[in-house]
Length: 293
Image (cartoon, rainbow, N blue to C red):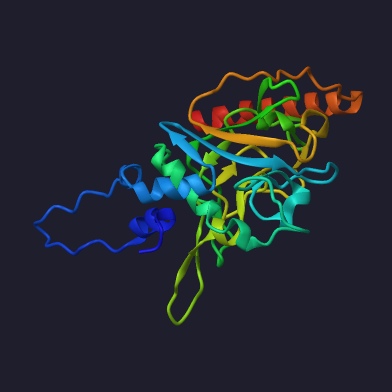
């Protein structure tokens, strides 16, 4: 068997034994427990500097966002989408020449996914759609709170909610807390003749999205997440490019040090925000009597 980076995936998708009608179905495999008991799995996490404990996973990386334009991914692995991403995870600062190759960080997405399982996170369902009818299925899953931690020149620890770094043009506000869910990524079927399946997050290198994406581990469920260009990063709140950060994925809220002042919004944005709020209230009021009938 390959190193335990792929252990959880083999357990999740292995066919179960058959059983007679009068027999009880086999007990479901506790993938998280299996991972926690695997020395091979823990050794694999050390390679990527990923740690876990109940309800909390940490991974290292650096700030890559350059500002301007849409921000479609909060966190990824490959530099392909760095212009639309805030943090790129790695296993330490890159010491090579030029842009690092994909092979440099192969296995990190799988390791992070398995660490989330080992920490007790329950995967949901990735964003998807019906190819025939066009029906859209929004992402679902357990809420994940995402923080960036870094130290300043004096060694003081900073911790910020990464949601506070995103502006939503649909709601005319920063992203609200609790809008990320652990979907676990789509498995990609390579098609006939063997229909071999590949772990989507590992193939694409996309880990946390603001634009709903089938292959990410963690997806956004805020209004507008399924529309391109909904989010832009608030560059004034983000540490400088190249700053080394640790990303914390937590079930529970963590204490933060970065409490940003309210954004200075133009008169036009404030008026539009008030108009949308009134329209939503009117729509909700009209819907309520109809539901009561």
